[in-house]
Image 1 (cartoon, rainbow, N blue to C red):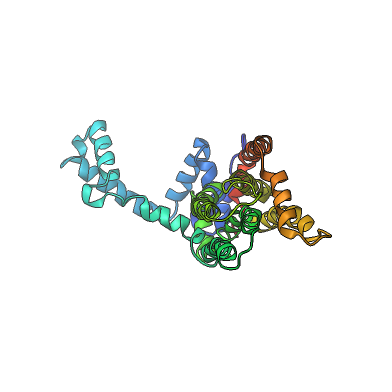
Image 2: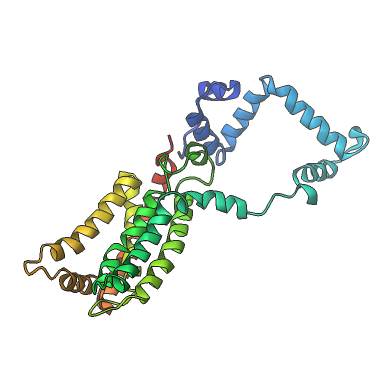
Length: 302
C-alpha cells in the first residue's frame, strides 16, 4: 500500500456510509499509516450530517476545559481531552480474562474436547481392560493428529457462530488462530501424554515422544493454511501422517500389527537424531508461518 492514496470517490462513499464493509475496513486500516488520507477523510466526514455531532463533542471538551472557554489555554484543552479519554476507576475496562475466554472458546467446546478424552481413555481401556499390548504405539500414532484436528475445528464459520463478527475485529487473523491453537495444545498435550505414561510400553517409544511431531504437524498445518485454508491444510497434514504411520503396519503380511506399528513409530519419533529433525522442521514451519502471516488477515473472513 506504500504510495497509494484513497480516491475521492472512495472517501465520499465512506463518509456517507454507502461503502461496503470490506472496503471500509480496508480504508480504515490504510488510515492508520497515512496522515494525508486521514485528513481528507476527516474533512469529508465533517461535511456530512456528522458535523453537528462532532461540533457537540468539541463544545463538550471546551466546556470541560474551563468555565470560560474563551480563556482556555492549549494546556487546558489538552488536559480536558486526556480527562475525557481516560476512564474513571468505575469505568475502567474489565480484565482481559473474559475476552481471552471468548477468543479461546471454540477450541475447547463442541466435539473436539470429548474426542481428546475418548482417545486418551480409549487407549487406557485397550491396555488395561482388553489387554492390547500395542496400546501405547496406537496412542502415539494418533496423538500427533489430535491437536491438528483441534485447530481445524476451532476456527471458521463451521466452528464459531460469531465467526464473521470475530473476523472483522483487529484481533482476528493469525493472532486469533494462534490463541485458539495454544488452547488446543494446552489441553491435548498433557492429557495424551499422561495417558501414555500409564500404558505398558513393550518396545514402544516414550510417552512424550509424540510431542515434537505433534507440534510440527500443527505448525505445518497452520503454515499450509495460508495457501489452502485451515480445513484442507489440516486434512492434508493429519491424513499424510496417519497414512505414513498406519498403512505399513496394517499391510504387514504376518498380521503382527502391534509389532510393526511399534517399529514404524521407533523410526519416525524414536531417537535423538529423529527428534532433532522434528525440531528443525518445527522451526522451519514457524518461519514459513511468520512469513505468510498476512495471508490470515482474510482467511475465511467472509
